[in-house]
Amino acid sequence: MTAIPIMRVEGLKKRYGPVHAVDGVTFEIPQGVCFGLLGPNGAGKTTTIEMMEGIVTPTEGKVIFQGHPVGEDFRKKVGIQFQSTSLPEFITVKETLELFRSFYPNPRSMEQIIEICSLDDILKRDNQKLSGGQRQRMLLALAIVSRPEIVFLDEPTTGLDPQARRNFWDLIGKIKAEGTTIVLTTHYMDEAEQLCDLIAIMDHGKILELDEPHKLLHKHFEGALVRVPATDSAAAEEIQSANLDLTLKELLGRGVNLEGLSIHKPDLEDLFIKLTGSSLRV
Amino acid sequence: MKPFIAMFKARTMEYVRDRGSFYWSLLFPLVLVFGFAFAFNGSSSLFKVGVLGAGDPSLAFLKTEQVQFLTYTAETKADSVLDKLRHHSLDAVIDTATKTYWVNKESKNSSVVRLLLTRQEGGESYTEQQVTGQPIRYVDQLVPGVIGMNMMFGCLFGIGFVIVRYRKNGVLKRLKATPVSALEFVLAQGVSRFVIVILTSIFVYEGTNLFLHFMMKGSYLDLLLVMVLGTLSMIALGLVFASRFKNEELANGVINLVTSPMLLLSGIFFSLEGSPVALQWVSQALPITHFLQAARAIMLEGAGLAQLGPDLAFLTLFTAACFGLAAWLFQWE
Ligand SMILES: Nc1ncnc2c1ncn2[C@@H]1O[C@H](COP(=O)(O)OP(=O)(O)OP(=O)(O)O)[C@@H](O)[C@H]1O
Ligand SMILES: [Mg+2]
Image (cartoon, rainbow over all chains, first blue to last red; front, side):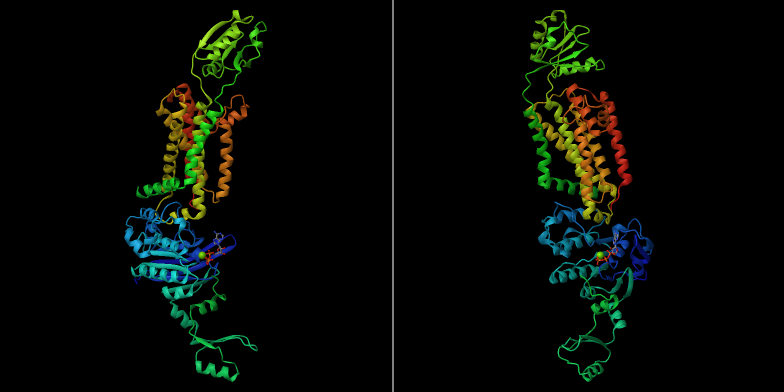
């Protein structure tokens, strides 16, 4: 990590008529990290990331890239995967990759892209005939053809099966290992936990928390979470416990039936629910 | 240059591989030309004679039943009526004021009409004048029309509609996220469509000419130049539609709204001669009209570029204005 963050956003706001899609966010992304933007639907993640990409013009605030306002060569240095894009029709995966390679001065070699994104099997396939997982791999490939210094991935794994999602994490791991900074949004907490060095939790256009995952957990939770399932006579309970001994004694003292009780380490999912008051609406 | 070539290739492949529209855009014009050539093949049995002047009661010929008489007003130029005789759309022309009649040496119908005229009462006092000219069939006039129509649809939908669809489904947004400039993108789209439309036009012309042997009095090079100008004007107009619309249904509607009057008022299928002056004014404001006037003048009258000044100037100005407007209006999103 170098001293100058690769990207800095200051007081970023976006208004659509009466809707404050993004309502003043400020943060920095250090070089080489994987930065996760989490939040429920409509939180403003896409709007934020697209302002950082220079696709959406902010109503207020600024985006600083490598210490300067976003300039001419920014487009050559970023890789972007949108939440929803169509690929050009009637051309194959390979032709599409060639097309996008032609846009950049020093693109990755075809072999390398195919290798990183495991596109071997589908090179000759028409873009329109890809499965969801193949499509995501292809879109990621397009985002990295340029050897970008920073990659933006907006919900890259939404709609993938668990296996495909894990494969995708491997791809992202490879890109990160090259030193590329990654900014991603996701609805999956396990994904954020697995991939991200820094996470920002957003809701209603504002950043609620931003830190390393374990620090956030440490800050908001002490010890473990004890869950007591519902019984005929009592509702379910969730207790945050700094001292398990004490908690269990207290429960026994109250005559609570301990059958089915579970103790678990708080994770991002718990934090997310605590902060946004909603479980993740995927 | 590399992105331009790659985008040009991608767009052209998209066209060729979209089999349905590909074959449609090639076959439909052929079917039209051949269909009309077949339908209008038999000449009508009636003779047609143009009459200039106030009429002549002493001329029995003017009451002949087998002849259809078309009376022209004093304003009509005698020469334009004689052109119809030269092209065989009239079989003779009579001027009752000067007691003259004209026949076409190369028309059999003309000789029959001459007999009908001179053998009837009053005919002997008329003097004969002759013109020559090969017949212009309906297909000779139609073929530039069909090419113009194909040009219009090919460009307005292939550019206007397709770019709006790219905008709607996010392809444009994805390109905006690359270093490609809007100009490079639009240029690649335009050049691809240009090549496609010019090749299609040549294919349609040559494919039907092989069987129908169109009248071609002028130069093929001039005709090609007029096609180039016509295509550019349509691409430019397509870009105006492509510049802003976000919704393909809306774009589709507006393009249809514009193509329908152009289809009817540009003189593609029938001449607007004799229609209300207002319509003729509208017609003169449409680019396809000028493409057709120029193409027909080259093919049917052997006109050179110098004689086509007004039409070529109109097309050039129209094209420049549309390109300017499109550049001013264009937005990725
Ligand atoms: N172009 C737009 N016009 C009007 N409102 C918009 C526009 N884009 C986004 N919004 C609104 O801004 C808010 C934030 O949207 P955004 O797409 O950033 O959310 P998100 O966090 O990415 O949600 P999701 O998880 O569903 O992708 C939403 O209320 C949305 O309706
Ligand atoms: Mg989103």
